[in-house]
Image 1 (spheres, rainbow, N blue to C red):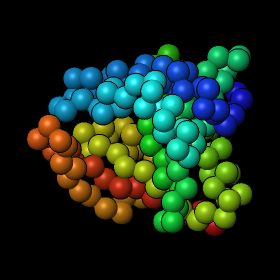
Image 2: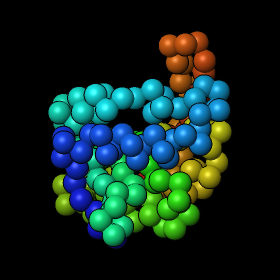
Image 3: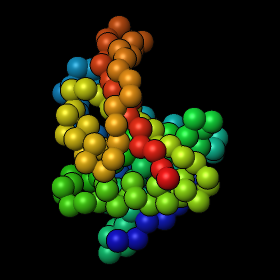
Image 4: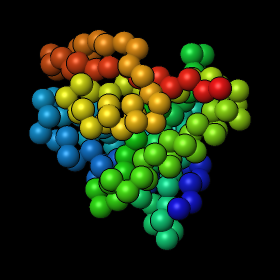
Length: 156
């Protein structure tokens, strides 16, 4: 497996991986906002400083994670593994690369938010050292509410 930093020109590939991965949440209420994103929104985010790691197996993109360095730590989101590669440790490997990058940048915390309705994701992050430090209800513009937990992993 090879993990590389994305270029702005990778926006279409990043979007494709994300949509494939997030389709399993299309029937959630409400569906993940990841499914509303377009190649253009991903492109714009990358142009405006968002970063992304892409994981390749046999030169084929299979996973990605988008992130930003913030004052409180490295905040990541939209971690996506294509369905046929899920459950094979790909997410853990890309998160390990993200940790290495954070350490290299002197960042001491990795942070993410996870829907409480997706316990398998909370379990995944917990299994590699993340802890829940907050719970909140996110109010979406369409009037729906989503219960989420904030998770954090402290580095060195």
